[in-house]
Image (cartoon, rainbow, N blue to C red; front, side, top):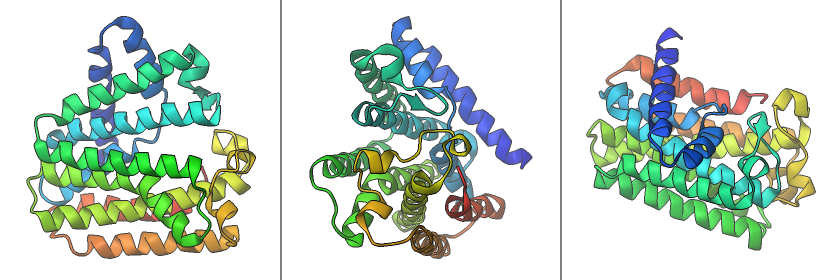
Length: 280
């Protein structure tokens, strides 16, 4: 646990460095509000742990990890505008704090800083660009072409959430100079973890208490958002079972990886368990 905390500290310190380097100060303050107001840092942890699992170091992967966290945060800023959500991570969302225009500029600034971190490696840039294409398709689908089946929902979950998780793990493998087979296996692991995460997120939105969750609940139903409990006939219990199946498939994908650091791999295995068992 101490080693996990060291990795988290490494991420937070580098994230602060990046934010502190943003000009002008107004943009830096807005990015700070969005990026440093909390968050689980799951995606950058996946980047670092994937890198270490196949023989790299946390230091080699931290810039890519911070970059993927900035991309994720940029997407949340836009999500909150679309959803008219005034809360994010227990504090005011960017648009509620600064207004719609500044929030959009904040999202742009976050993406700019992210791609500055990826720019030294063409493979890293490609992986994140591909993930953002998928994310964009997912967001557009959610707004204009509501899924009507479990299969269509799963495709949406892969694009909306799985794609950035996949990129996070692939970035870690790239940082460790892994071969394409390893990059793909770690990517599949993380994509399936991301899908399980999204399913569980939808269930929690439907059944959890807002105070326990730390954000408003019932949002998906109020906005007629295509959550797993809105689109399919699955009960929350059945949806949780689908999340468990995705997590199990993620673990199977990890079995294809030649492991250099068993401790880092163990944390990845624990993450696959956590995303289906979490209550917030």
